[in-house]
Every structure is written in C-alpha cells, then in structure tokens.
Length: 280
Image 1: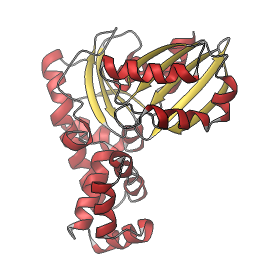
Image 2: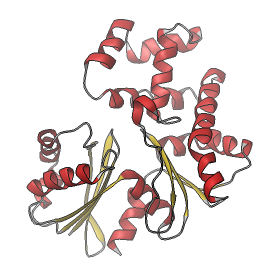
Image 3: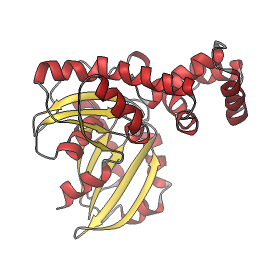
C-alpha cells in the first residue's frame, strides 16, 4: 500500500492506494509541523478509522505539508508519522514541492500557491528553487485565505465594512470585538481561525466591496510573488494551486490579464495529480 498526503494548515487530504487503485481516503485537520506538535498529530491520526485500519499495511508515504520547509521540520514530522505507520518508508516535503509536482510533473514552470497560505517558486523540473517568499500568515501570505480573513476582520473591527456586509458578518459569525481579539492574540492556531472566514468572500462574490478586496489581494500577490519570478526566469508557464485560486478563478484570471500574463492551469486539489505521479 502507498499513501499520498497533501496538507495545508487547515486540512490534510489522504489517499491510500493498492496496486494503483484507491482503497481508502479521508480528510483530517491540517498537520503543519510549525503549529501542530507530535502529540496532537498522533491524536489526529487516531481519530480516522481509515488510517488506523491501514496503518500497518502501508509501506510508503509521500507527505507534503505546509510548514515542512526545513530538513529539521521534515525529519520531525517523519519521526512522528513513523511511530504511527510503523512499517512505512516516509518521504516528507513541503507543500510547495507537492504543488509544483502536481502542476508541472517533470517540466519547468512558475508555480504559485493560493490556499490557506501563499507562496511561489520556479520549478526546474526536479525541485522548486529557493526564494525569499514563504513568510507565513503574519509577514506574508498575500492573496491567501489567511490574508483575506485578516483583511475582513480588520475592516469589520475598524467599522469600514458597508452596512449590508457588516450585518451579514454579524449574522454569520456572531462575533464581537473582544471575542475576535481574544481569539487572535490569546488562542492557538490563529492561522486556522483566519482561514475560516474565506467562505464569506465566495458567498458574497457579487458584492462590489468584496470584489475590490479580492482584486487588491490578488494584485498584492502578483506584485509580491509572480512578477519577481517572471523577471528572474522569464515568461515561463504559470500555474496556480489551491482553493483560493480555484474558487476565485474569474478574478484571478482578470488580474493576470492586467499584468499581460497567461495562466496555464489552476488546480484546486493537488492530491489528485500527486496520486497519479507517485502511484504509477
């Protein structure tokens, strides 16, 4: 058996195969080694019957995780996983590597991530080349669901939301200023809390204020991530991976046109392409 896993900070997607066929699949909470310790990771795994029942039969695991960007983090996560999947050979890489493989396979291209977080890299056909991006939800993630959640909360708390959107926000989330500030500054996994507000954007996509927020976020993403890659590596094939890119595709395409760039592909769930690549 082979397992392929793609984990953002909010959700991890699991596929287990045997002889090239998927025999089990499930979603768990995201397993980001920057925020989720070994004890919590094992608790997450033990909650899923599909993982418990197949743990001893899985021989290889390809795990792509947000936060697994350094050798130390990768080794730490692999060690934790090996205590649950005792007979597995475990390969851990960061989510950007997984996104690049899912979008390009073995061909070069520029790969941008727009999901719970944001990142971008030039993929040379073997690995994403090092860059200065990936600053996380506090210093970076422009255009991601973290970013949009942060902007929505800031505008709500500042009284800048139009009356109709403010009313909808209060109805949907029933949160006041003290509750929001307490959750952000005194509770764990703030990044997951911020991403939880992304649905507000898809549910109100026809609202001009929301459209403007989305466009500003995507322009920040292009200015921060895409243009430096294009300037350095030329006008290579451009790919996007992640829920935000897929669910706001129309606005993303319009933003690309503003910069005279063409998007080659947009992949919502990279786990599908990764499964094909690592099980064929």
